[in-house]
Length: 440
Image: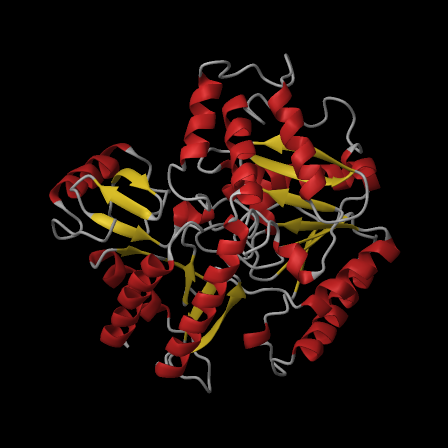
């Protein structure tokens, strides 16, 4: 399969559908592109006008195993013939238990674990905070600058960016406290990993010790997602983990976007030497179906009383079947090794682009989860969101779907399906390079 553009994008059918969308759908949901997709396979999308585009967004990091992977589709079809819904809270079923067992065995940490299944990343974040509060009997939660944890009220309160995520929605949840994130490229005293880690941790510790009571939990993305694809330094995470353990504070890793192979390992924590008390999964876990999980120390997970956490649809049989197929693909089909190779290729290619274009201030990430930060000047590091936004438009008009990110809107994040071939990756990166050359 290859990029094939039959009409100018957006085509007439997409334009007609967008008019219907504006008339009938609330304005709140955003659109990165004006494209309406009809079908997808592997790393490609086909829109309603017959255009075939490479997908470097993966439905915001969901289809890590590729669009409509045959094993995922087969698992869904087989499950659909047997059981669509029962609600685990009423009549239980094996798929939920089997997936929990898989998560418990796969999550970092040499301690007994249990899991809880929900529907979305935000719902899992909400429940992780509830679990931590129930176990500790404390309320305060520490989160970080540039974080994105979701759109429900607790998750939105933990999220950093004011517009569009928090603006206009009223009073946020109380007892939420925000610490600096060790964002090396923009750290005020330099980018040395050890120095940044120690200085950032000192600020974190000072914040915690200024509170009237010890916090229940600390929640962090090992790799910032919406915040700009910034990996936390190993040194910082080590300091954070040791402090949380000594102070009996629950550490929570939000791996909603960085999990399930996105960084070349099942969880980014594996590469960063971080063993949190709780780890949150979603997005890539379901291969395209909605499912999320909180996995962690058994005694902490059992903090809420029976009936204290749950939901009608959490761990739906179809979603569990899809997630179990994703586990099989990652564990048995060599996809994680392929993802590591993709990461090496991508790192090399982006380093070349950074050397060629002065508007690229930084490239970083883990494996095939990479971000490109655009600046107007490398010395001042003034953000260049206009270029990032224009590049998204150039790319989809030439057959490539990408997304921006970052608190300043100046970062392009690359989230191609992990099944993409090196040739397809190169084809997409050529469009990206042509766009930067044209727009810089």
